Image (cartoon, rainbow, N blue to C red; front, side, top):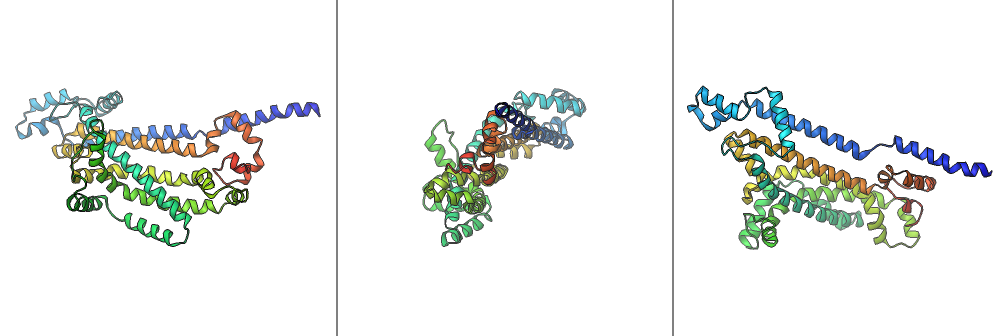
Amino acid sequence: MTVLAAALPERRRDAVARRVARAPRPLGRALFATGTVFLLSSLLTFGLGALSNANPAAAVLGDTATPADIARMNHAFGLDRSLPVQYVTWLGHAFTGDLGRSWFTTLPVSDSVFQALPVDLSIAGLALLIALLLGSAGGIAAAHSNGGRLDRTVTVVCSVLGTLPAFVVAIGLIAVVSVQLEWLPSGGYTPFGDSPGQWLRFAILPAFALSLDAAANVARQLRASLVGELRANYVTGAAMRGLSARRVLFGHVLRNAAGPALTVLGMSVPMLIGGAVVTERIFNLPGIAQLSLQAAEQHDVPVIQGTLLVTVAVVLIANMAINAGLLALNPAARRAGSVAAADTEDADTEDADAAPAGTDKATAGGAL
């Protein structure tokens, strides 16, 4: 008996070590997928510019360009080399922050892009924050009043907001808030570093216009997830143990139900960036969308490629942040990379199996 008792922990540790070795690595897979998507996107971005048959001599000099002028400018911009060599050179320079030079101004594209990018990042970040606050409040209120008047009201409001394009909301906000009420300016931009208060005055309207659709999607998804979680057995058990409804909701239920809503919020990032093209024009914002439009009108291929590549990188980084948030909400995924934590989990296997997916050990074991 003594020998068996002493050998049991060692066998358990070996079993746990084998499970951990076979366990998936969500973060590693996400990094690999992100790198693959970035490379494919960069190839597509470069290919679109190459297929445009545009060249700096034709774009800058027009019909007055001679064959000698075209050859000279193609050599200056490296366009006389093969396409694979051009792509590898362009991508290698992009990793160092060099996105080439504009055909018209000869200024570094990275300077223009990174001067306009903070405008979009600040507006999109504020829009995501508004969407998260409004969506979370609406989803929690609707789930708490499941089937009631508030639930139906939130559902109707979300359905209406989900059908309104951002530019329609933007025009309505300008007409009401800026023209009639004269509360906020209708256009312009002040960097956050210069004056946070002035930045907020200029940024709140475009951010609010962009956030409503994402807020409606988050509210609908969070409401559906919360309704399902509130019917779970561990919620009933927590109530029987005397825990307050607020503690159960915000301490356990909301964490388990937030995953799908967080995924929806991450999927809204490309839509926010895409909606910035129209929103920037309406609110006269000097963002990356306006830079892209000006470059497209001038057939300035290096600027177009640079803005597209940076936009793709921003979207992928945002998706990586969402994946990290999902892993943080999933205790099982966090424990997968730790033998010691997995050994602790193994000691309470029966209680964990009885709990819903995503519930931590304290919840599964009845220690809410």
